[in-house]
Length: 126
Image (tube, rainbow, N blue to C red):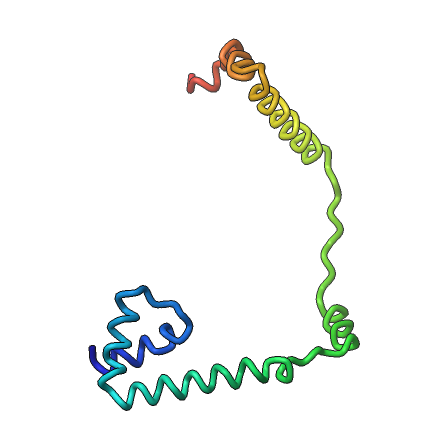
């Protein structure tokens, strides 16, 4: 493994994202390469410093900022419930109930009712 390949994989190794084969290759390279080993050590120190300072780096924005942003956003238009959408929802829930009923002991009931109803002529492409 070259230093260029190792540099690409150092962060993945540090984050535990490498599979065993690639991790072994990088670790073998690190044993013989002082430059890459030093780089990994620096990355580890940076990761530990960031973890330790995580609580100090967080900032909670004031509620007044949230209100200003919400006021600047366009309001969503009110959704009117129309008859078609209500019927569609009713049909979907009825179909789901029938399918559920079919699994509880009325096996094949839904399938039989579908097979017994002939398709309209327009559905056959005529």
